[in-house]
Image (cartoon, rainbow, N blue to C red):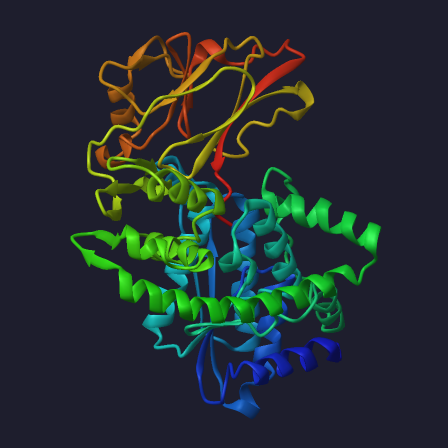
Length: 467
């Protein structure tokens, strides 16, 4: 039972190169049960004696996959006992959090996972936190961010070291991970949702990367990885200059970021975009970088506009022109967002939310119920235009599975949705009738009857700026 040395050699070189561990540290290893994190756990456990490491294992069950995800947790706990390591496995009802927010399931899962992971690290006084990101994750993230238009801040990729987070496998390929696990006679768990091409990362992994390898050979991934490393160095240099410019220009007060438009206009274009991204990050710590198209929107409409020019950004952030100043702030409570209208099948952004609403006609064979709270299938004769907005006083609908019509406010009470979350819900309407309370319930009048050969697929998903 001898482990493959390719992974070990590469991971040790990466640790040395980025000075991840000196010896004697407490390390929390984030283990999903999949091949990458299992390989990382065995690799680090093999270093404990020589380096004096103290390992702790953390696992989060997002409760998306029922018994399958519960079995993942049991598998990780079994591995921890086998290796004699303390572990913490917790379950969080992420689907219910998704239903009470305007975020995508992946965005919510990522934030919950990171918060709970770092909380456990604090609890055990860990010096380092180690997730199992690999070189394939790096390539996939780079390609995703090209598609999303993330700019240099995004194309620099996943950092090998970020604060106390270290990624020893960031230069290791997935095939090397699989060889390592095979040679250890370890059979990791496999997440069935990784096959669902609804998600951008899965489409990149399952379709785009194989296409690129087929057209340009398997070495294309090495080329992309080297490009990420090069851009990371460029990102670091520009980032230092952006930080200096932001510190010089920005005035932070009362939850706002404000800077002089004339001084801002004298900056090189790359620094202008960086300062705008930094303004977003100041108001939205922990969020993914704002998308390129939003940055260019601020430059064109707000920076280049007159007093009163305004642009709604994701997460209720607003950019405005106030005489000689550019101001970023979080939208005020009760500030109404516009109603958006989709005239025909297609997609459109939902202002201030970072989300996109989509309506597409599909074959009945593509209908899958219960896969995601932000996807619904309705009758194919749904009348356009469709209206998408937040709840208003007096809204009523006929909840699927319930007798008759009901006030939306009463429905929210029935499902125990906190009042603070109700205003962020999205409604989809057709000819004035509520079709779907997004993430919660379909209107019974628009359900599929079972005889249709086509269906209308409605979805609300991230607007390209989130991973």
